[in-house]
Structures are given as structure tokens and as C-alpha cells.
Length: 412
Image 1 (cartoon, helix red, strand yellow):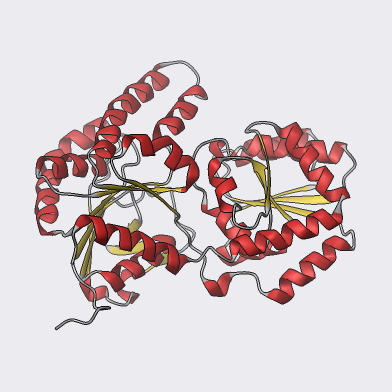
Image 2 (cartoon, helix red, strand yellow; image 1 turned 90 degrees about the vertical axis):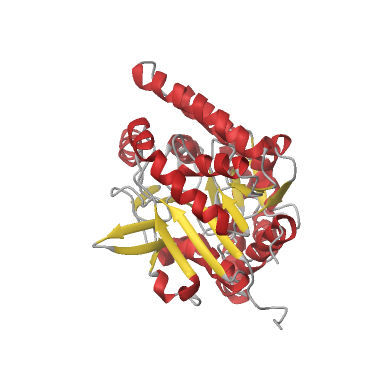
């Protein structure tokens, strides 16, 4: 007779790339590995099907799957790299055979369609054909994201090809949502955008902060005291230098704060395709004495920067659920930036955020300037952020997602 806490059922995940392959050795994205620990605690077997990442991308941290507790009950099946019509069509038949075999064995199925010609959409089609219930997870509002990306592309053949790909993918994406048994949608923006398409949607969060990683009381008190004493403001952002993160809007905000005579230092930690353009902006606007663009930093370095920051300044341009906002709150740094249902939902319990309309760098600079001149309000905002962040914990978040899957997908 099994105990109530004994892992049961077979979980299958067909998801975007969360693994690397080098010298024949598989390594997993550290954040995904954290979720995998929860899955291995709850399920008797776990099978992950995904392509390896492209060679040009590296995860902030990598984990050897053999080091995970329960690794003997885990299988990592690497699929061909798709994302292009010729690759997808060439490998489609073989992947269908693999998917059908694994879908037949699984009790719980988690799919996460992400991009044109990915295998998760194909897996949803196979589940529909085989009458197999599944959970579809999403961490961004795909249709809104594609519209944003297309709107920012120059006219030409590349844009036409992308538009065609997104149209084709959008049909499969909507089909996967409308036929899902449950849809676990991460954060308020994703839920608002996709819930109307799903028969049984739930709003969840992908939290990667443990209880031990939250800001401690002495560090929080020191930060609040420093702010009350009128020290120059420390503004920080940690994330990719990519158009969806609004790096130029962020720099425009910084420039406005400099022109207003504010005493501060702004730091962007993170590499990406727009980093060179950001550096040109800093040089052209003579922001070098107020703005640091660090490029790639380690996870501990990013955590230390955020924990010491007075404000986590962000300019996200799209409907997604970036984990950096969760981490900022957990580290007692108020989130101040372009507002959304996601960001407002994170601070709904106790506060800890100030928001303006997306794209309005002038209003954002005004908001930061007001806090700089009202240190009592800023100190209270920091305390509020830590209180809201205290409710965000990795193990609690993944346990809720597992509970929903087991409840609605019939796993015993």
C-alpha cells in the first residue's frame, strides 16, 4: 500500500529547449531543473521531450540531470531542432512516431507551444487525435507578442515570411488552447489574453525564488535606512537587452532623470542583441557617469545588484510574465515601470510597485523623481515590496501547478 506522499503517475513534458548538448552530455537549464525537482517528487516517472538550444545561446546556469534526486526515474529525449519549415517537414514523421509512443504511456501531459514549427504544437495535435487530455502552459500572450514583433520589423521578404509563419503557428496555437483540458497561464497579462480561448484556464506563476533567497530583515532595514538618509538612488534592471524589454525606453528614462538633476546611478545587467545599440545611446547622450551597462553577469551577481537597489526600474513592452519582477520583490526592491496586469497582480497583496502606461518614459521618469524627493514614501514602498515578495516562493508555486495537473488530468 502506497503512502500519500509517494510519487505516482507518469508525467510527459513536450516543451521548448531547456537543455544543451555538448560532447554528448546533456545539461539542463537551472530554472527548469528547479521545477523538475518538484515534478520528480510528485510523479513516479518524468519524461522531458525538447530540442537542444541553438549553439549561440547559453543558460545562466546549467545542471547535470544525473545530480537530481530521482534521476533514475527521469528521461530526457532530445528532439531535432525545428523552427524552420524544411527542418520541421523533414523530421515530422519520425517525431510523430516518438510522440505517439510517449503520449500513450503518459498519465499527465504538459505542453508549451512557443514558436512557429515547434514540436509542442505537433504534440497537441497528436493528443487531440488520440483523445488524450493535456495541460497547456504559457508564459506569454503569444498572439500579442507576435503582433509586437511584426510591427517592429522593417517591411520586406523577411517580414512577409515571419507573418506567414506566425499565421500558420497561430492556428495551431489556438487549436492547442481550445482543446486543452486545463491551461496554466502565468500571470495576469497572459491570463487576460489567453483565458477566453481555453475551456478551463487557471492563473499561476513560475516562481524561481526559494524561502532562503528572500531578503533578510537586517539587509532590508539597512536599505530602508540608507534611503531615509538621502543617499543617491540605485536603479537596477536585470534581463536581456532585447526589444521586448524596452532597453531604449529604459535609457530614455535614465536620460530624463539625469536632465532633471537627480542624483543616481542606473545599472543594466544582461546581454542581448540590443546591447551595442544601448552603448551607442549612452555615448551619444553622455550618460556614462550615470549609467552602467554590465553585459552578462552571474546569477549571484545579479541577485546582489537587485538586493542592493532602491528601485527595480523596468520598461517591458509586451504581455508576458518576466520572472525578474518576482525576484525583485523577493529581494525588497520595488518594481517601478510600465504597468500591466501581471505587475499589478504581483504587488496586489501589500503593494511595492508604481506603474505608468507602456512606452511613456516621461511619466516613468516623473514617478521616479517623485519617489527620490519623498524618501518616506520610498522607504515605505521598499517595505511593501518585501512584504509582497515574501508570499512568492518556488516550492509553493510548483506544488500548485502539480496539484492542478493531477486533479484535472486524472493522474492517481
